[in-house]
Structures are given as C-alpha cells and as structure tokens.
Length: 239
Image 1 (spheres, one colour):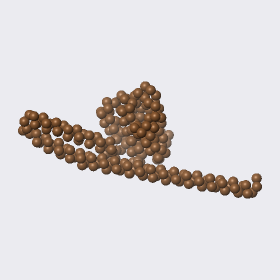
Image 2 (image 1 turned 90 degrees about the vertical axis):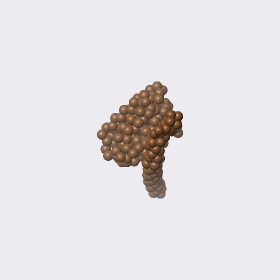
Image 3 (image 1 turned 180 degrees about the vertical axis):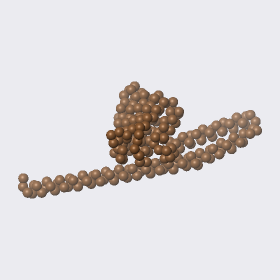
Image 4 (image 1 turned 135 degrees about the vertical axis):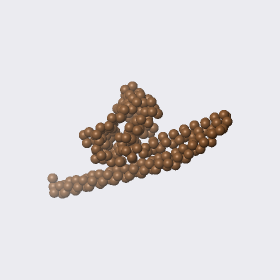
C-alpha cells in the first residue's frame, strides 16, 4: 500500500465519521422538534378540555338548573316536554364532560400517571362493561412528557380492547425494570393480526409506536385469533 493510499483511506474514514456525526445530530434535532410538536398538541388538548369544562359545561349546568326551576307548576303535558328537554340537556352535559376528560384528564396533571390510569380504567370499565385491573409497581420520578406518553398508549390500547377486541377482562401493568418503564395491556378478546392493527389508521397504535420512538422506546404486540392481545411498551427510565 502506498502512502497516497493510506492518506485516501484516512480521509475517507474521517469523512465517514463526520457524516455519522451529522446524521446523529440531525436525528437528535428531529426528535427534539417532534417532542416539541407533541407537547404543543397536549397543551392544546389541555386548553380545549378546560374550555369545554369551564365554558360549555358550566353553561349547560346553568341551563339545566333554569329549566328545572321553570318546571314548577306546569301542567302535565308541558311538564313532560320540559322534562324531556332537561334530560336532553343532561345528556349534552355528560357528553361534554366525557369529551373534556378524553382530551386531557385533569387528574393526569393534578395527581400523576398512576391516578390517571386508575381513573381511566374505572371510567372505561363502566362505559364498556369490561373488567379492567390496574397493577402499578414502584416507579421512579417521571417526566411529565413521559407520563403523558404512557397514558396515551394505555388509553389507545384500552379503547381498542373495547371497540375491536370485544374483551371482557383487561390487565394494565406498569413497572420499572432493567432500566425501562414497561407498560403492558393484556386482554381476553378475539385477537387480531398485530401488523395489520398497527398499520391501521383507525387503531391509532401506529402513531403511538412513532411517539414511543421519539423517546427511545418501542412497542411490541402479540396476538392470535381467539387468544386475546398483549401490548407492551418500553421507555428508557431516563427518557
């Protein structure tokens, strides 16, 4: 090998190293920007949820009370019509509260991930008829963005268990193990094709997988017909 060959090889190696460093820097910048976008989305959800609860929700509450007051002394047929209007107002109020919680549950910001997961399990269990057990181990202090991420993954998995898997029992488990936060959602539903489910725009799991990658995490999904579905999300504890 001539001296010129050695110089060319060294130069190529140096260029290759610089290229790798540039790719790594660009990837870090992309992740930072994508996290910022995700944070802005959650902030907007929080604002909308607050507006629904404090604005439209309070207006509907006041309207319902006013209708109840107007019902005093009304004759039978008019009273029945008014009662129907009150019932309709009550349904709209409950829908508004539900939508507000779905957008951004206040308990996630006020009490943290564990309380939010348990509240989600109770609420969805009551509305779907599923029995949802929540098992949460001892966790390290969690960044707010990571708490939101894990909550959204659990929310999406539980919604899929109710809508697509027709499950009757679901287990939600969150533990810290081996340097990772591990979230598992396992149901006894009809099962599915994992690849097709993740690729489906309707399931929302594809978007969750991409959000996990922004934090150095990953998602695994195992299922077969009649055998239920098990989803596992991993996020580094230092993410």
